[in-house]
Image (cartoon, rainbow over all chains, first blue to last red; front, side, top):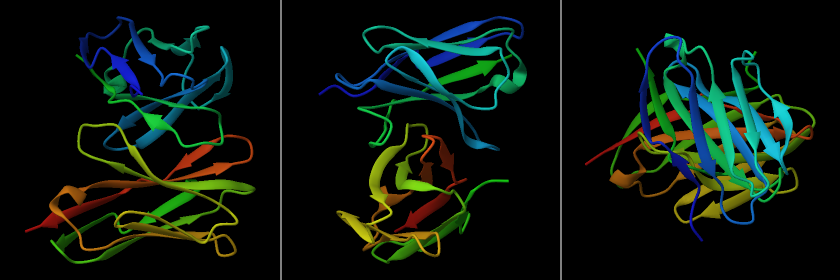
Length: 112
Length: 111
């Protein structure tokens, strides 16, 4: 089975711009979660989608949003980028919420 | 307050030696506990996942233990190899599906 894929792998944006990141989960996995990882904060949970519904949300501002499509692929959008949004954004999929999550390689975002 | 505390923050060991990483949590009610290995610049990879009824689980040279009464878990690495150099993250899942992440322990294995 192919693993979790994320695109793009690297991205450079400037403050005020918006960005959309994409995640394709492992085939058959219905749960997709997004995380932000920075050196100072570690892994921070953004949100989780299951069958196109957002089921959980972390403590991030409304500039961070996401959605999941009927084929379980998910996108994450960050609007009005800030310097502090520079991070590795990880997507993870699992068959359901109680099973092991499989992480993608991440998208490294740099905001200048 | 972080509900998952890992120790030590970092450690250096010689190739071939063993080491043990600790994870203490306060998440309640508890559903499962997971250990992940994350190589620099890559996404985490699952090592083990344990429910409250499991005391130990192995994955090759990695052995995780869980004491649900004291809310403690450990990850033991046997006969370390250079490829074990990574960050090891403890993640605890509550029954509300929320995951609580530890800050991780950075392991450096030296030849």
